[in-house]
Image (cartoon, rainbow, N blue to C red; front, side):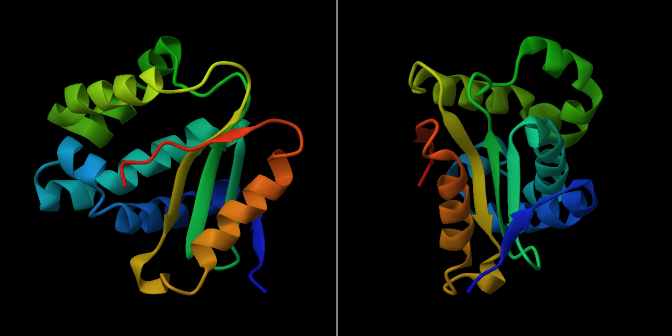
Length: 159
């Protein structure tokens, strides 16, 4: 049985680094960050920022951080302009000259979101070294078990 628990602030760096590895070959991340070396440097910064941003929702991880999900709560599936302005420097540090591409991708994802209230599975990732052991599925199912009875859940994925 895989143990899944809430991820707190102390797990921020571990989860961000793992998500950086998990998304290293993701088509959307490859489009935002065309240079692989730049992507490897910037993804953990981006995921640390998103980890913080998704604190109002639900952040789950396996016991040792091999897999994690970041959920946004009903009524708050996207990042508002005020939040983006408040986090302008961390966003620039994470995205650099790739910021326009990231904003275009975010707009495309937002255009497909359903109406109404739902839990948004913003990010789900498993460390490539731990794939094939059911950890990613376990952390997704744990989140669904916590939210599905109250609201529908939604996931947008490039793959």
